[in-house]
Image (cartoon, rainbow, N blue to C red):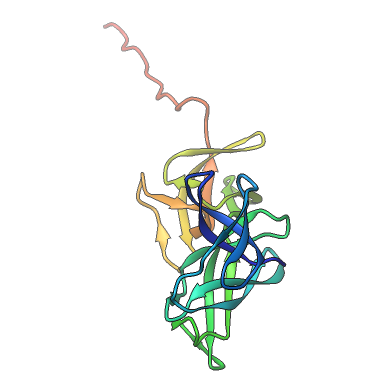
Length: 208
C-alpha cells in the first residue's frame, strides 16, 4: 500500500493528504485532492515509518504511516491512513506495543506496532425498548455523527428517542442535551418516538 503523508499543496493552498511516489532527499508526491505532482523537501527532523494494524468491524489490515522521531503517540490519538478504497480514513489508537510491551504512550522510534480502530464510519448499536421486549438495531453512521440525549433519530421507518448512551470507556451519558460522537458510543438505549405528545384527558364539570 502506498505511503501517505500531509504536505502543503500550492494548488490547493493548504495542507492536504499526499501519496509518496518516490522518496529521497526530495520527495516526489501527488496531492490526493487536486492530483498535482510536485516535490517536497523533508525537514531536518528525522522521521520513521510506523506499522499500524487497523480494525474495522470484524476485519483487520496493515498499513504504515510516517511520523517524526520523538513524537509521542498515545491511546486515543487519531490520525489519517489510506483506506482499502484508496480514500483517507480516520483511525483512533487503541493499543501501542513498545519493546514487546503494551503501553499507553510511547515515542516514535520506540514503537513496534500501533493498533487502531477505523472511526470514519462506525456500527451504531441500538437497544430499542418496545415495552415487553427490546429490539436490537444495528446500522452504519459517520463516526463524527452527534447523538444527543433526548433527541429523536430515524432509521428507515423507525423514529426513536435517545434515552441513555453507554460509552466505549465504560461510563454512561444520560443527562438531557448531552452530546456524544458515534465513534465514542458502545450502545444506545432508546424508546419509540410518538408523533404527537399524549394529551391528558379533561372532563367538563357538570353543572349543579
